[in-house]
Length: 413
Figure 1: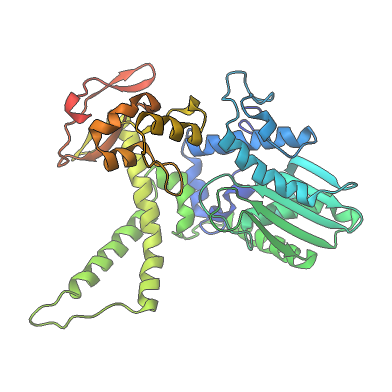
Figure 2 (figure 1 turned 45 degrees about the vertical axis):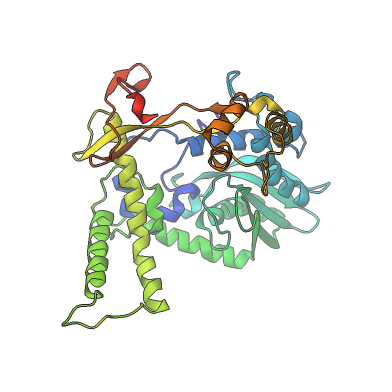
């Protein structure tokens, strides 16, 4: 990736980290001690789409489909060509920009924002906004943030977006700003792909004062750890270094099991009945950090196992590859016609083309074998499971590319 995205400077209290550090101040110092983590596939996919989005907008265009099959000129020559799926997601984000932008408007892309006035003159909270649009005729300021992940993101009260808006306001304040609209474009959202929140200048300045106060807390010793959903992206949690979320999870889990035990019918004890909606809501709220903690714990265990330090009571097993229809068969309709030509009368559609495993389950292995030329199988993977798992263990040995299977019993496949 280019310097614009992959190598861009990141700030410890920047907008992207605000939902965490503004709730849990000590997480800053605890995370600062840890090395940077390698980018996850999801993060790389997001960076890839951001890079394409910026390039297309700088070209004065709003559509990605014409670029399908090509490599972005701002990326290395060996970068993956743009796929149709990625182009559709980029188009969804760019359609919002096209809808807002009009002739005479000013548009800024990937703009470094100075938020030093809220961080005691330092650049600790600076960030980079995806798109800023200023309409001189109406003095309307639009701040747009692209989110290409699956995790639903709300726009109203979003602390990351608020920091972007404060930075954008600092740029255009002298020109006059009468209205501010913050947008989040999230193509993978299951609810609303273009979300907006309008806030007046006075209220945004109030948010700035709250940001100043939160920053002031980072300069004080003895601030409490606060666990919650924001722990998901905390390096200290993912590295197993946060005692607060561990103690919280163990305590709440123990309390939950104790309550469950008390609810079992016994001769000397009445059944407590179904919890009320209030009690269920309270239990779910307390359980959220436990889910975050366990997810991070699973990832940590796998990371340690790949480094040769397999946790006690765990083992590696091989997992089969995923079967899909071949990509170069001409699309779903072409695949369906080819399958029906091989097996006349074959029902391959429901709401969409049935997957190979689903179709095999329906017609049987022997019949499905006739469609072998239409199916491809990805390489299998490896999973860390309890030693009680019935699948045979797979030994690992180091290679130049990381870890590879030293032995993979045929019975696994």
